[in-house]
Length: 164
Ligand SMILES: [Zn+2]
Image (cartoon, rainbow, N blue to C red; front, side, top):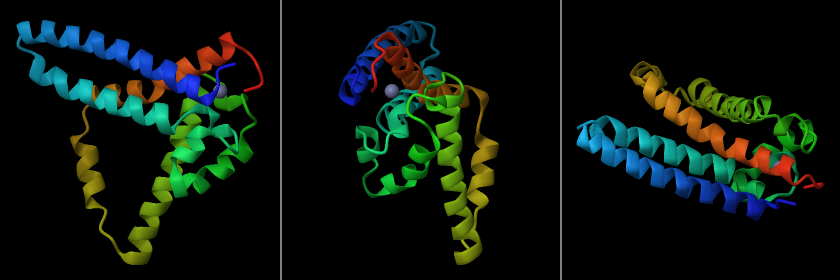
């Protein structure tokens, strides 16, 4: 049965539990004086998690859904995705699902950046600098934050299998 709202509730509840664990871990890291390394990662993870729970739900495969509406005017970007992916098909695959949405979003971002660059001659050096600055740890925190709410969603859908 999990409707969009119940999904979000479950994912936010999971985040609350994770934040409790993170807070506990932070306390432990403070004792070990590692908190300066740990806190930015926890922040990256939490922000990515919220972004994904709110805006990268597997139910973007539905033409009308809460996650669609949360995109506001930008929801038109997701119409092809809903047409391309059958509801609860590959979009709800634990591996291909999150990957498909990240690649899809990346495709849009790349097209917009390419448009800005080639049509309006906007410099894109900041992208290369940003890429050079990216390290494995924040990238892992980001990926985990983006993927985890999707996995919770898919698990819930499988646990309560009904048409939504
Ligand atoms: Zn679903």
